[in-house]
Image (cartoon, rainbow, N blue to C red):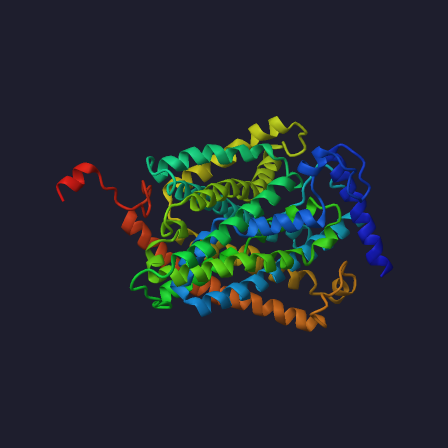
Length: 477
């Protein structure tokens, strides 16, 4: 017990140095004194971490979950949401334990993390060696890259339902520039107000979808045939796996906390709140529109236009830009470390240095504008490894020796009695996600993704846009 206390004290000492760098004031392990600037800009409490996790977990995917329910059916849709929500919370817990273990080991070696943000691939390198660093870096960066791409695609898809004078590709150009402004946010420490606003915006949109669908009622001759095909079934399941795989930024969020050892169950608490948004909205929209959702991956496309819907679209646009920043900030850190700018204190210099990261994201969003199907492909091929298989495997290897288990910085969780049970649970996570998520999900999502490419082509100008009827067309019809 005394050893664990000493480890926490050492960790807090190092975290104090990081906070001094970012805030320029003495913190000494506690929340800094109240000022307006601190209230809006500097966040490091457990509440800030909860808002960051909840806000990052459910953004544009909220609009694609009814599409997944049309593929899965209501019963499977709800079961997969609860299952992957709990599974994601468990692997986020594993990541937090590995971060604390890495941090405590390094601080015994008197390693200072001043002017340095710890990232997941560095945790893997410190605990398991350079090969694991390479694996973590490759999967994490690729996932975050496409996670940012998805947010940009979602911006273009949503704004089209307010203003269709421009096609979705043109809107992608415009919102690429808007999303690039996230280069000015130094770290997750500075997302306090944005996380709070983002979650509020998503909450409004979720309950708008629920209430508007119930008020609208069922469309005429509505059918609910899901699950209909295996390809669609596993595509929908993998989109839900992607939904609860937002903890690729867990380490960066923990590093921004004043007391990161408090993070362990924060992701689980965030997931419980997210359930109150995703399940009612997905069930209600699917109840109202049924199989029509199979050809409308964005729930906004089926609801009649109104001031309430326009408000939801605008709020989601703002939140998607915020979530773009969440996904892209770890990439900014990696790029800064590569070019030697990570310890630069000037926000403007760092912002300029970060801009090259946005360019490939912009380009990929224009090539693959497939809102909905791209979520499942990313979920199967990247999320399955990044936030499920790799953390569970890394945890087993880190504590494979009796000495490592005996000297672990953190005890086993209350719901797991011994290390044997811990290894069994981790092994089941690896096998399930490898077979169902990556295997069946990868097959189904790639078949569906290729079908979108064959139907709409790469660089599609306006993916799933309804045909426009001009006066000339109506006159000759």
